[in-house]
Amino acid sequence: MAPHRRLDRLHQRRITVDGRPFATLKGVPAVRWQDPYHFLLSISWGGFFGLALAVYIVANLVFAGLYLAEPGGVTNARIGSFADAFFFSVQTLGTMGYGVMAPNTIYANGVAAAESFTGMLGVAQITGLIFARFSRPKALIMFSRNILFTQHDGMPVLMLRAGNQRGNQILEAEASISLSTMRITAEGTQMRGFDELKLLRAKSPLFALSWSIIHRIDEASPLYGQTEWTLRQAQASFIVLLSGTDENYSQKVYSRKTYDIGDALWGQRFVDIINLRDDGHRLLDFTRFHDVEPQRLPKTGPEPTS
Image (cartoon, rainbow, N blue to C red):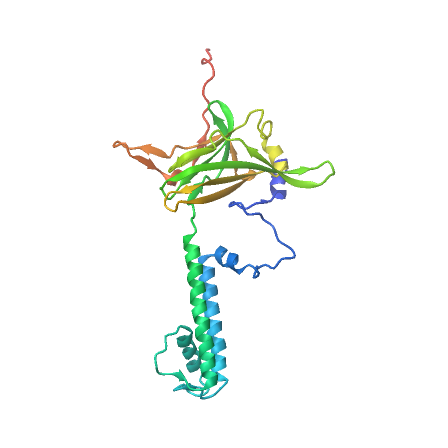
């Protein structure tokens, strides 16, 4: 078996494509209930509404059971009817009584008062959470599927491409690339180290269309003298961070991407995706955003003669 194929099998991605580490935390609960606000903001919209619906149903089931504990406590409700108790709870929790069923004992009125208060707190909490989730600015940045070891202006470079899918302006945009590799200390301890890669252009006053993020591989670069084999041995990965101020939100937005060494290509370049129309309007073709083609190196001397 070829050495690089053997390494492909042994090497596993340490960081997800969006920059989150692949790790299992031991000693902490899988769902961090001690930090519910962060949990409710970080789960998906489907999970958020699913959890809200589950809490809503459970709350109505609990209060329906409390109403059933006193037969005859609710006027016009059939004695022992769980359906009547449940839907009376729904009306009370939503503070929208229809006037058909009503509590007629001190116990039932006490339960109804507690449920009405619970409903008001619930509406306030879910309204605040939905607003917080909607108000968070989010950048719609597309990163190229691959990161390239190629040439630019006659020099070897590391290159990737970022595109602004929203089409608006991101002001004072900044980009950075960090090289992450496994290293062994003098004490024999294996640990992951990070090197920041200097970019040809780390800042852009306006980021509206496409941005080629380039690191030149010269004598000062941590990638100087590295090969695909050595980078695989070091379990190398590249962490890309891009930030800027969204002109619509007037707030800072962030986006990140991680490339495993298996995502790197050698001797390729990105195809041009910006086309100029006859009327001078620019067309950005995102359908070819990830496309690459073989690097065509410039001729460095005269054609040989026969």
